[in-house]
Image (cartoon, rainbow, N blue to C red; front, top):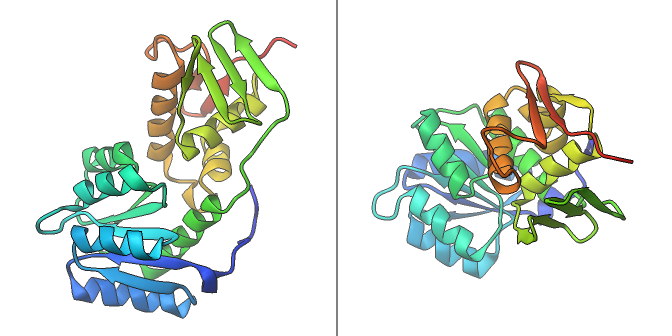
Length: 240
């Protein structure tokens, strides 16, 4: 994990999507103070048009909007782009967060929010987006059912290539790179998401579940990713 930003914020374009002008003004003001270039949309349709025209580096997207809501807008964005998306919402239920992450959101921030937290999470998302892809030179044969080639970013499960989201890939990379060793929740959150996310244990639980459903034959009884309850996770030891 790199410890500092490797991008110039003056080159970054951020799209704010919210039907409330007051919220857009607040977010825009704080982002522009940090020298980001900001564009705006007041609804989902405008957001998709701005996305196609300006190709932003990050989208900050409100959930509760008239017409096309944030979830539908996110679904449409994910059909054409992998741009990082941060959801803004007054709805703080765990189910809403899971729904947004399932659709491809990268982060959630509840209203009302602290502008400093908004900026911190914005930097973290952009840093992850511009981080070099972790890679290893050799193919790893875990067993006859699971093969991983980090150089090619390929994961083969029972003979079939499995597509991983970028966050899933980074999580698998760190687990396999430390096969046989227990990695604490805090360590994995810091390495995969950034130091700003060390207390966001629900992100880790969700993505461990996503990974298990993609690589485990029986996710309820995993043979690759083991839970050390209350401490962290461990990938099975590899035969040398």
